[in-house]
Length: 448
Ligand code: FCB
Picture 1 (tube, helix red, strand yellow):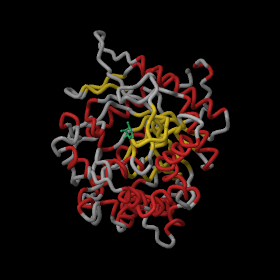
Picture 2: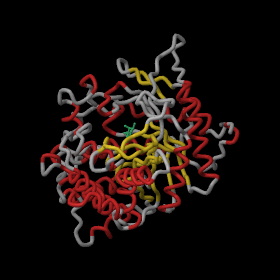
Picture 3: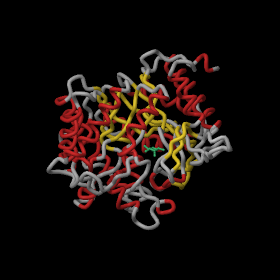
């Protein structure tokens, strides 16, 4: 398949995605309160090199320049997240108008540039005050706090922002935040009940927020963003097939089934047993409110065999030799096609967006002052082709957001992993459009 066959409709959204804590910096400005990522990144030993998001890409001050760069890349969409602690510094209570004003200006700037804003309400930067109260997502009352936060944001921006995403990747923050501890809040307590509890409250908060958004925003398009993998069994043996089924249940179905079917997957409920979620009457109805679109964050496939790498699930990863990114993630574009088809076939959301897809490589500035990231160009080409294939095969794919606009604070990896189509020189905050950015610009302009 050549680029000439990259057939996307004229109204297709081409964008990049970012998250507040990863790019904004300005953590102490205009009344922002502390988040769990401030606490986590400032705790010795938690992030690579002790890196923090204190300055990040300084996007809080350079957003005009960043919008101009998006224009240069011919993009017509931008997915970004709102920092809850900028809006409600203590998690609840009095709204910080200066925080809302920042996002209001950003939205106006995007619209003036002809770029449709896609807003994520929760991309992991929980106000620290809510973490201190019953460990954040482990406390059922946080559902009301999230609904109140959603209300404040959507009242302020809902006249101009029509595309809303409630949560980014519940799987990742529930498992890595509350069980394995690799991410904020970073409590490493190997109790799967913490994951199912945090996830249940996040799912309830999602359902509550969808209702608030529909009430406050005329013409709202509301979706949820999931981290999804293509899960394959290592062999046809019943043991491997069952292992892959369990892993798929743990990673994919646990967060999709409740939303689209109103039930947690029965096989996983049985497996989790006493570690299951604290479901109360009416909860599943609240969680399964219809959505306008599903967001797919896609990075990896897993090949699974029966084994003891993950306790309780009794699975082991098989890692065949393959091209890998700087994150050690396999480059295998057909898996994106598989996931898109699967979401379409099994859940039938009215629309699907690829809300994140991209790769980290060890980019360097060349003697000519440019960044020749040909591996990322090839990566994007391969994944774009699979998206086009899925579209041709009937998937209602409406847009593609590359992760990420800029090299940024990659959570526990700090600044060591560069995902941007634009290079960030952290010492000077100079941005350099990489070759992959120019490639994206050509594709977005319909020139393939
Ligand atoms: C996703 C996150 C995003 C970024 C990419 C690489 O899991 O949503 O913030 O870190 O991975």
